[in-house]
Amino acid sequence: MKYLSLVVKNALRNRRRSFLTITSLALSLCLLGVLVAMYHALYINQAPPGQALRIITRHKVSIIFGLPIYYRDKISQVPGVKAVVATQWFQGLYKNERQDRSLFFPRMAADVDRLFEVFTTYKISEDQKDAYRKDRLGCVVSASLANRLGFKLGDKITIQGDIFPFTVDLVVRGIFETEQNEEVLYFNNKVIEEWLKARGSNRTFAGTYTILVDSPDNVARISNAIDEMFANSEVATRTESEQAFALSFLAFIGNIKLILLSICAAVTFTIILVAANTMAMSIRERTREIGVMKTLGFTKESILGLVLGESAMISLIGGVIGLSISGALCIGIRKIAGPFIFQFQDLGMQPPVLAFLLLISVAIGVFAAMIPAWNASRMPILNALRFTD
Image 1: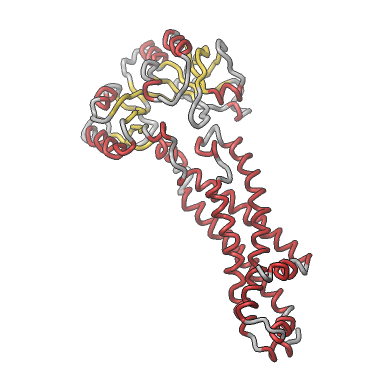
Image 2: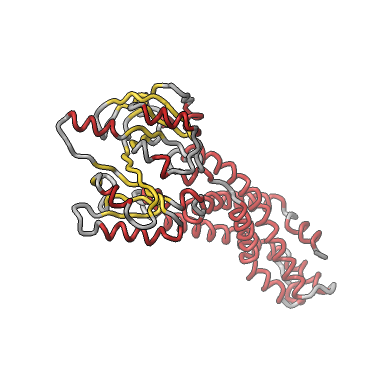
């Protein structure tokens, strides 16, 4: 701290170069901040308590294939399973969704009598729950979806089917609160079954089974037991946590984890090069000055500390500016991607992410200046005083 004022003065002595360097670092750390925040949201964030108790069973080959409906009763007999609900992705189009993608939201058919037994964290009044169960064309929507699209109790929602090519006219009978501000609509899966029967098909199936287990510690055991039960059946299954199931959709894009880590590594390497080049130029210009400082009694250690401190300060300033921009970008990404990737609904510069990135920015500054600082601190006084550029 004794030399703090000197560190600040030297770090900003060449204002043009300092401004350009800080700007470069800020932009790079802004990108790094967004990427790390996304990685944290996808792969490090712990599942909420309610979600940690839910697992999902789907077709082992692909989610586009259905599962026999009788699997539901077999799954409910597995020790540790508290409740099972059959769900089916309906898809379809709402209004002019093809032109306006902001109108997209998940539309799911589900067992009306079992839905709230499994999704115990959904908060809804008993009156609305009863109205939903009694109305064959009734539906329930999450509060965040209702707020975004203006749905109210009694509103009519028309969905033009595509996977199931028929149009369904639903009536909002309930609005429920969720743990993670999910945006979703549920309606009675009997609607799909009746449409299939009207066309001569007696086949009943489910797209997935969402299962409530008794303890997070039993998730792995119950998942394995369910998959082993159907290993030699007509349709093999794959059971995983609700969080892992959601992440599996991103796998269609590619190895997102590897992509994020690769870009982070490239950005970090670029930041180090920028900072190292700046410090090498700064020290070269001040070689004679460093020689004078040594004649005045500055030790090798103090010279090393001064140079490292200058680099760390420049990098920290760039980091603070860049991460501030990252926070704003995360808010924008959250609004755009939240309805599609629910892990991004809490995307932001969380305290652990912010602390990690600030530490990284300082570490980058120190690492980038290590070699120039070491050379400057070990340069003999006569060589420093004789130096001409």
